[in-house]
Image (cartoon, rainbow, N blue to C red; front, side):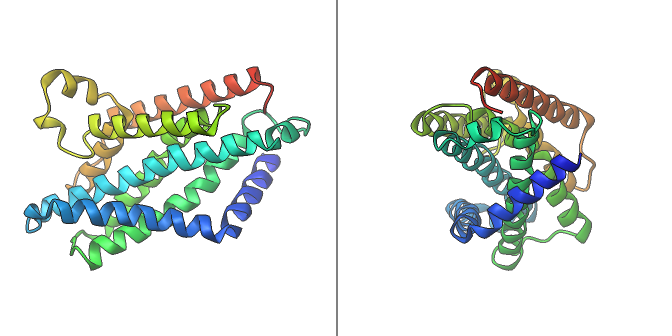
Length: 244
């Protein structure tokens, strides 16, 4: 546990020292949210739509950061020999990946706060204090399965391959998971598949919170299951590759 805490602290310090990375990580989610909400301005007077779409775009942005930013950073470090260097240390298998996920969570927290501020101050989204806090906490914690998916993307040997696979997964999961448009308007077959995707379960829990409800147990269990599968798969592949 002490080793895990130390590694998490080191990774957080490394991330916070990279000002350009932090700025880019905060600007991109805000740009996504602003562009999409202004493109679909026809429902601007619908308070419920405003709240739900704020949640959808926040989730969409956080997922992109988790899959692509974390995944590509892991591939880059591996190509630079960092993973090989870590492999000769007494660091337990998985600790390196968990520390990366924790550090990315700090960036996600800043992104959520900034997007929520933009939603409240510019788009006049109105939520209670508990809805703001509850939905933000859900998005922050519920992003861990996608951070775990990012570690899987990080097992690729080529940055180009990792970027291509990450972007395809990012877009498909977001569209089929109902983050761009309600799942209810999609064909029955796609709707049946989408209801079990991690993106839908991620969004569904937050949508429930802004609607004054509690996240359903199905979403909680599904996200936990996805997280365990992605983590185990990432650790297994990295061990086969000879990395930590």
